[in-house]
Length: 528
Image (tube, rainbow, N blue to C red; front, top):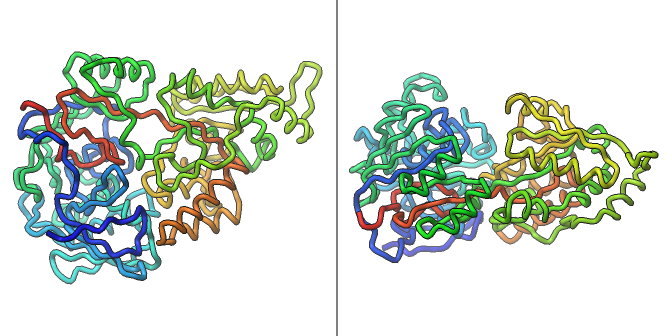
């Protein structure tokens, strides 16, 4: 067996070799067979993560398509379709050694040329351009060796090789000249490389997957069948979990339901498993125009908004505190920043200093606050009440639908807005986009819609994006977090309280860093 060398998170310059089967198994012996029924909260556009972002596609896509690597709960990469890999000392190439004799669901061999084709397809079609931007070529010296060539070191590349972000798709299917985003086999007759194959995708009803008997890891998956029921109503999901019709549901966030499930002896509700997804809630500011362009106004608002109230009263204790744009589950998180504990006196003093004195009615000025989906409305209304105490009159603006909100925010027609944004594993993928001045792109939601500009932040992110020493990289991101916590283009309050809920019958639930956007070949039903 090949010796395992542990790779420090994000340290691309280390040469690392891993052996197949390194993922830890549960203490009891997994049983083979059975049908696991789980819930999906929305209907995916299609099932191909190579050309579509989001966990709605990533969840089923991770079962249908294999990726080069998989990750454990400690952010350590493990072998998957790549049985081993080597990173050049200069960080300018990564060699993937593919599993021998792996095949697609139609029996065709998985080759290094499919890896090259997949990278090219992702580069040309996936919205996360930063993931593979430095990859200039993929050499294929033989059918089982793929060498990714880079224009610069790219520590984000290792996480980008996860199932959510780098599915290996077949060139003999998708190389037929059709648009990959609209390819008919994104949703029907899917030819994947993963542990399960598609039986049926019936929109707004279900996705049914069955065991792929020729999967390249012997004995896997353990389940015979995986039924994903599309249940958009939280109450219906709750009933299904409690009466045993559902074995598993991920990305649950209704606080009352979660607290009730935690008291159910037949269910486990845990926030574990979302560190790479990195979901954060924050109050974003327009830093380019209006009253919120003034840093003292932004700081005053932060001091007037009680994060503890949000955590305890709105989220009922199920969300975790977060203080920066990097998720606290990340090894790059810096908790030692200004957190703006509630201080009404300080808020008033900052507003006075900014020249906004109260009038006879105790008002200073008015602001709008937006929210894009119903779950954010309580927070918007809370901010209205909180800022009233310091003389700011807040108008809560609802949008007719998500596109309306997205257009309003991305065209800078706002003062403040509540938002939820994902880290997507590495900061290069999901964090930089919010802060880089080069990413102020009108009309593009989840870009730098705050219009925030700081040349030092740009420089720190550029350096961190290519730094291969994990300690130095963490130091760069720590400095970045300190600056943005001080300048407050946005005020981060909490992690989105995603929970995974599963029956006592479920073994090896998806509790790694990618939640259900990771392969479920290890999951099984006890006693089946």
